[in-house]
Amino acid sequence: MWSPLANDNYKTLVNFDLEFQPLTLISGDNGSGKTSILEVLSFLRKFVVTGQPLGTQLAKTRTRWGSNPFQTFVMRLEDGETEFRYELKLKHNADRDHPRI
Image (cartoon, rainbow, N blue to C red; front, side, top):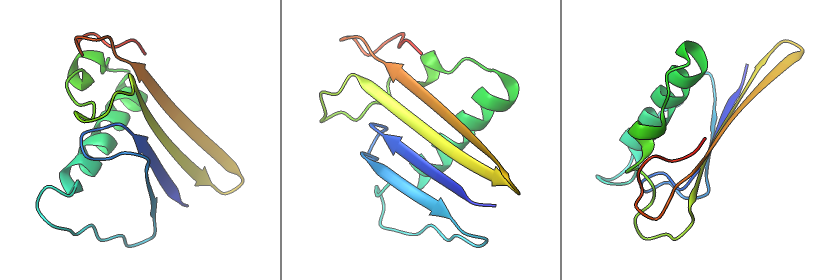
């Protein structure tokens, strides 16, 4: 089973890809995005498993220095011969509140 995670425009993570291995260690300097990776995984889990709406939670998480109005989150999981791909794309308005899924 592999679990690639792709993300664009979330806090410090821009065009970010991470492929998990059986043991994946996440390390880095303060402010490098370690907690952001865990937050993205938590948000995706809540959205996919429980159907919890995420728009208001993600409204203020868009990368501050960028002008891209879209946030994209992709996770792929493989179990044997079956592949599952989850993609969440948000479009933010100019005020960065109430993004559209």
